[in-house]
Amino acid sequence: MPDYGIQEVSDHALSFLLAHYRKLFSLDHNMRKGSWGYKSVVPIKRLSECTLGVIGFGRIAQLFVTKAKAFQFKEILVHDPYVPEAIIVQYGAKPTDLDNITINSDYISLHAPLNDETMHMIDENRFSKMKPKAFIINVGRGSLIDEKALIKALDLGWIAGAGLDVFEDEPLAINSPLLKIRNVILSPHSAWYSEQALSDLQVMAAEEVVRVLSGEKPRSAVNLNMIS
Image (cartoon, rainbow, N blue to C red; front, side, top):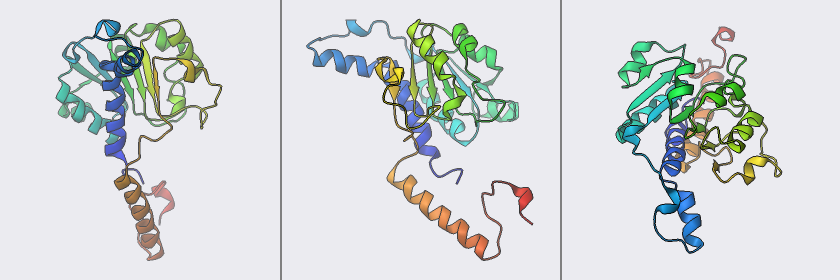
């Protein structure tokens, strides 16, 4: 079911971005300790002065970019070698390579599938080239990021933080260092969820079964070559 939760996942990625941008968790934490005012979260840049990088440009990423454009980023960079550049341009983004996104983005959102080509595509070398204020979001697949490299990048201050809904091993181990790092926002592979998405998933799966048992082709086949 490739499209049952695309609205929700794109919303979740944007929520990670906005929560970090306005430093909401820090403001909440400091206020509960008795701190009043904005000085604890200085500095905050306007998003119109920031560059957004998007890696992978399928259904979810396209919705994510459509929604993110409302915040008037200085530039939106997209890398996906399998999507025609003309389509990327149609969404108001600039096609580019992975190096450009790594080096120049203030926010990086991962939406690529996991395969041999994308496994650990964000590794220690990539992290070392990012801006110190960069924030990385992963709502795709956990192993797009080398988790050990991410932890090192956060510990050494190579990047400012991360928003993670997916992990290399799930569920995330209770002794994972990620649970102790304050500038990481975590969610338990739940970006897809809403009541409507859950209903869609169940109904669409049942409809696919009915199609196949009725002698029809499924709407969303995993491998079209196997369907006569």
